[in-house]
Length: 222
Image (cartoon, rainbow, N blue to C red; front, side):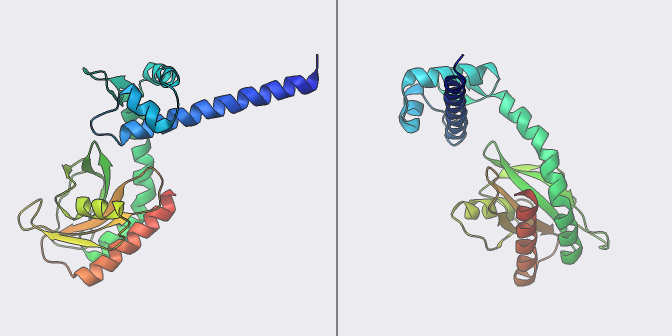
C-alpha cells in the first residue's frame, strides 16, 4: 500500500466532510433567518451549490430532526433545533446569573436576560433584588413581542449595532418601567439584559448599569 497516497485520500475525504458540515450549518442558518421558510431552489442559490447537493443536505438534516418541510414543501427548522436550544438555555442562564444578581442589587429592580425564540422575546433568567420592599415578579419563560417593552426593543436596536440602553413605560404592563441593553458579540445569540420596576427609573444611572451587565454577560458567554 502507498502510505502517501492513503494519507492524501484521507485528507481529501476529511476536506469533503468539513465542506459538507459547513454547508449544512450554513443551510440551517439560512432557514433560521427566513421566517417564511425556503425552497430548495432558494437555498441552492443562496449557498451557491446545486439543487442535488441541497437535497442531500436536507435529507441528512431532516433525518436528525433539524429541518422539516411544511405543507408547501418549504424548508423550516425542525424540532431537533428546539431540543438543542433547550439544552443550551440552562448554560446561558447560568453564565448570566452573576451579572444579573449584581444588576438587581444595584438597581433595586428585577433583572432579566431575554433571548429571541420563535420571533419573540423570552425571559430566560430572572433575578429579584433582595433588599426592596416591593418589586416586579417577572416569570421565567414569559414571552412578548420584540416591538413591545425595553427588552425586545433593545434586541431590535442591537440588530443595527446600537449598544446603548432603551427605556419604556407601560408597554407590557401598565405601571411597569423598563430599561434594557442588547447583548452583543456572542455568535448565534440575540439577547438583552434589563430591569423592570414599579416606579420610574433613572435612565442615565440604570442605563449605565444594564449596559455594564450586558457587556459582562457577553464576555461570560463568548
